[in-house]
Length: 585
Image (cartoon, rainbow, N blue to C red; front, side):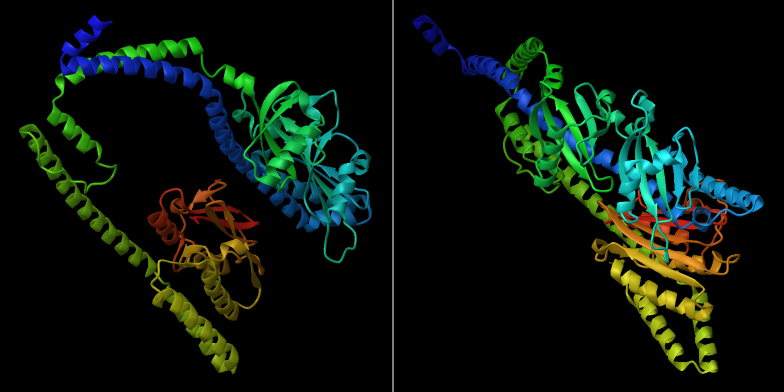
């Protein structure tokens, strides 16, 4: 031992450093490999839980789209006078009954076509004993079976609200399992519902919303409030009860827990859950710890890889330590302190000749880069401001001319009070569009401008076209560009009701996480968009707007927020037009 120590003392500084590095690397490699094997399970559980939480959010987003389709279908059915008449009127002559049935079938075909690729079957039971089913492949049973099903009674108790439930029409056939959205059909003036709407979605079709997110040991389940599994990638469990899993899901959803660990059916599982208020279901993600962690890593391979890394590291350290000079190591240390995206961290020109030359070149590069970035930012800022100013000055002169002409007619007729109100509305509107130079305003201010604009148009055209707004309270303070709704209201007033003499324009604003959705829907004539169900505003071949048109609003949104945002249009001849606007919150 003394000989070894004496030889070590006689070695050069490089040899001593290398021996110390060898011992350190070997010890660190063994320690890290051992600790990694012990900690991998906990780290994997945490990482997997975070990843699957994001997956649950994606599944919820897909289900929200399905729910939106179901809600729209229920609204279309509830607003149909043909359906209400078929379900409330008594039997007449054979010809009358045939005409009613034909009109009913035609109306249901239209509604069914609007469902698109959602794979939803529709059935309606009327209070007068009549019934209609759009597709017998979804429901082939009798109307009495539906009427006596607990879903019908539950839907009646909901008082016209949409109600989701699970139905197993035939326990021996997995394709007869449905998620049924039921709704009692009500109408003003009627004390009792005139019928019940059923929207059937096969459990196998519902499963497609999340099937791609499942894997071996990673299961997804949906439970109703009674603890019944209404859908799962493990089809053998669909329809069974799991009170233990329901209690865990409730605790996670109500207490805001990230996850829970349970022993379920002899398996150690991690439970992630969330509540779906639209469906009144709980979404549960089960992670089998043994199944998933068992496939994570091979301990033998882990140690082999650690040894190989240590050997490579020793070779690199040997050659690099021998070749690098002190001045170069100092320069590397200084350059490593340059933070990411910080172009003002200049280096002091000191040290050896090589270090001074590199420092000078590095500082010169930073100065040139800073000058270039400053010029580029200033140029882009000026270009953006010029484009925004040009777009925001496209105020329709015809609107001002027509409004003043309307005021002139009102004065000639002696309607001075109405003329005064019209002038005040015009002044307020012009103040907010011309005098106010802010790029964005609140939704509340935009609605005030819209109110003035609607008032002016109703003075000019009468009250044959009514405008109703539906705005979520949490959207009132959101910032939006000026005049994003007025062009579409203007288009609806002047172009949507050329055939129909009256109708409604609905303005809806709601928030979906970090996206603000604005919709302008009219019940007017509609139009044919070259057989395209939805087109972006920039591809429209017809200029339908006077004043600030689709192109203007769409270009402003792209300029302000980028490519994912903008305007899209969908329309059906004879049914109306819908304009959708996406804006970041």
